Image 1 (cartoon, rainbow, N blue to C red):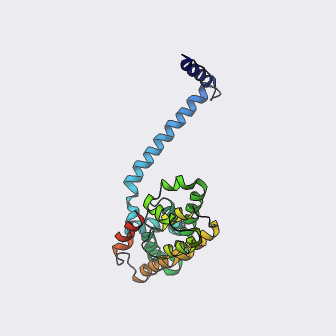
Image 2 (cartoon, rainbow, N blue to C red):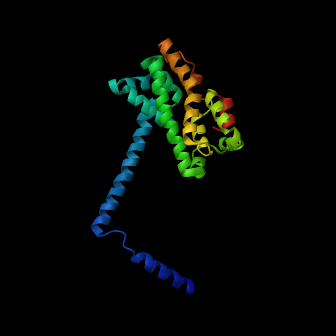
Image 3 (tube, rainbow, N blue to C red):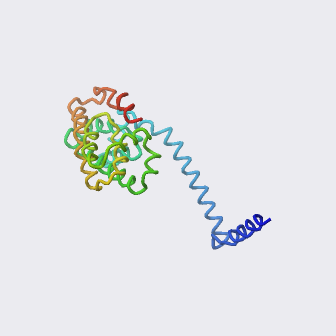
Length: 230
């Protein structure tokens, strides 16, 4: 049959393509591939077992303080990471920052971390487009943001960032899909997110206890979750 002949010719062409310079290099590539997969599997298992402490304020505080002079760098890194990957509730990090570094320095470190993470989230969203964001953000939350026209996007983002309890990280990815320049998005995130972060940090700094802050701070309210589909 003509179809069989076509597939035979196609397979012959594909089979004639030399991907590796030699069999030795092919074996080396396969070995590296297997090692990489195993390494990722080990990291995933260890992360599930040992990174649970990142949601516990007391253990997280001890973890960051254990780095001594590098503790601020660790805090900033975790705060940036939680915006992009969200393994750590940002509210807990704000409280830990206040307890360890005080109101002023704690707020500064938090804002620096949030700024770095927000910038990365905006860039990822803009670089890889809507398909990438749809794999991260709940479709209902994205649909609600889509209902806002470009003329009101700046004001909407600022208000959403300003209101405590809303999923700020989701807004970063959704905001990256707008036509707003990147520097303006970053500025909106800084100005909008700083008051709530400063409030939490100052609260922990003045009380000297993370436990004194209500548990509801660690997660958005039920009404917020329904609103944003999270």
